[in-house]
Structure formats: C-alpha cells, structure tokens
Amino acid sequence: MSKVIRAFLVAIIGFFGTFAALIYFFSGPSTTSYVPAPVSADDSPSSHEPSAINPVPDPPPPPPPKVDSPPDPCIQNWKSCPSLDALIDKYDKIIDARLQCRDEANHRAKYGDPKWPGFWDGGPFRRYSTTDNFKKTAIIHLVETDGQFQNEFGAMAHMEVICTYNLQSSTVTDIQILQK
Image (cartoon, rainbow, N blue to C red; front, side, top):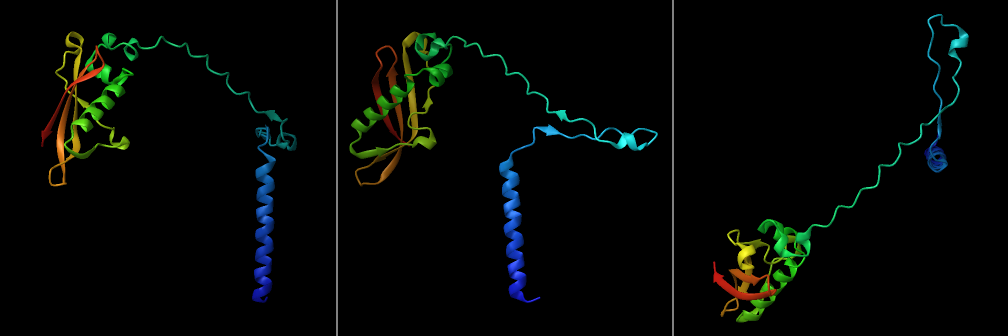
C-alpha cells in the first residue's frame, strides 16, 4: 500500500473516530442502567436473560436551609470586640485606620513618596502591638516594619512606622518613623 493511500485511510479513520466521539459526547448520559440478572446455581438458559431496566435512584433531598445567625457585634462596634485579635480581624473600620496611618506617614515623609507593601503582601500596617488595652484607652498601635522611605541621598531606606490610632475619634494621634 502506498504512503498516500495509508495517510488517506488514517485521516478517514481519525475523522470518523472524532465524529463518533462527538456524537457520544453530545448524546448525554443514559438515564437508565442495564444490570444482568444474577446467575443461579442450576445455570439454566432462563437465568441468563437480562433483568428489567433499573431506573437511576433519585438524588438525595437538598439540605435544610441554613438559619442565619445574628451578625457579630464586633463588626460594627469596636467596644464589643472580645480581644485585640478580634478587633483587627473583624472590625470593619480597621481598614480605615490602616489607610489613615499610611496617609499620615506619607504626609510626614521628607523626601519623595514612601513605598508600602502591596496587596499580595497584606498591605500597609498589617501588624499591631499586642500589649494595647484598647477597651480602656481606645488606642491601638498599628505597626509597619517594611515601609521604605527616601533619604536625603535619594536612596530608599527601610523604616519601621508605628501609628497610634484613636478608635473613639477615628483619628491618627501620632506617627513614629524609625530607622531600622
């Protein structure tokens, strides 16, 4: 058989194989299953006949709807947060505190604009002082250890920035920019 005829036959077989696969794919799954009858001990011909069509069982019922629990009060009110960790994780205005701290530090930079950790690094001021008694003082200290500030020579220097934030008034009360 010549190479041209062999290539032609391979192409035809490939086409019809693909065509058959597409027909099978688009025909959808079968909704019934055919199960042969169990073989009996006497091995008579009647025992080898196929059984009736067994329908597919119904899917299980859906789970009951979830009962919505009341929202965590810490989300809206910092005074109801049981711990500093809960305040940082749940209080919805903590992002405002982080942004205010970043903006105040940007304002106090002497030379150029500082560089802050990006979104994938958690953003600026993702750390905090764990010794704060925020319920008594309404003060938390947000800390950024990876801020970069431009020095008088134009080089970027790593600095630690400590932001004192008043939860009661929602304002930054102090920023400390410390050389590492």
